[in-house]
Length: 98
Image 1 (cartoon, rainbow, N blue to C red):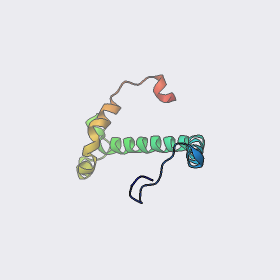
Image 2: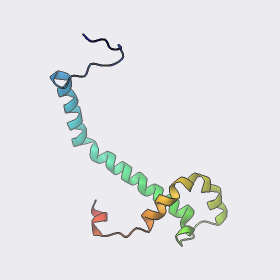
Image 3: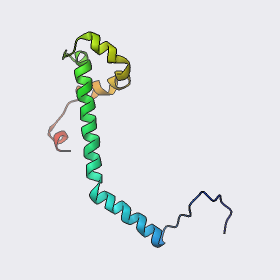
């Protein structure tokens, strides 16, 4: 047996462990993958909506008074550039399907 630390598990590509790992991956793909994609997509849309409400005057939609927008500005600054790019991007029919 080669010398290796005890905290590293032995990885075998085949055998019962490999079969169990593949079964877990297939089960995850069939059951939970679509739910996690939907959760990530709805989180992204909620973040876009929040930024639109708070910083909408950057694209011409003033909703909140500037005082509250300025109070939230330090939390939103890292996301503004990608948000503006996504808001002003040209969209087509296939964006709604996928």
